[in-house]
Length: 140
Ligand code: AMP
Image 1 (cartoon, rainbow, N blue to C red):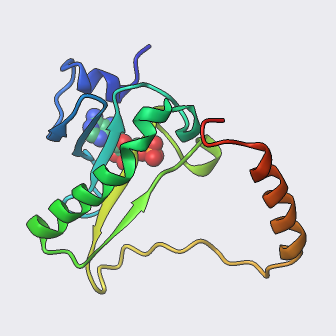
Image 2: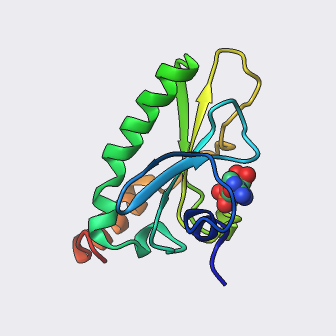
C-alpha cells in the first residue's frame, strides 16, 4: 500500500504544499511541532535515506537550505531543527523518507537534546568507521 505521503503527492489526500519539483515536494506537517513545521519528501517511496537514488539524494542539500530560508523569511524564526528519523527504531513512523524542518524560537519550550553518554572507545570506533568508510562509495 502506498505511504501516506505518496497518497498526498498523488492528490488522493489533501496536503498543504510549499513546492513541487520533479523529484521532491515539501508540505506542512499536519501535527506541527511549531508554526511552519515542514516536511521535505522525495517522490520516490524509499523507506531509508540510503535507499534513495543518488540523483534524488544529490538534490537534498539545496532544497533543505532553500526551505530553511523560506521558513525563516515567512515565520521570522531565528533557527530550525532539521531532523530525519531514519528507521522505526529511530522514531520513524512513516516509512517514506522525509526531513522535518522545524522552526525554533528562543525559549519556545520545544526542547531537543539526545541524552549524552560518556564517550568511551572513541579512537577505536573512529578507526573502524574509517575502514568501513574506505570500503564504501557514495552510492552504496
Ligand atoms: P516520522 O515520525 O519522522 O515518521 O514523522 C511523520 C510525520 O508525518 C509526523 O510528524 C506526522 O505529523 C506527519 N504526518 C502524518 N500524516 C500526515 C498528513 N496527512 N499530512 C501531513 N503530515 C502528516
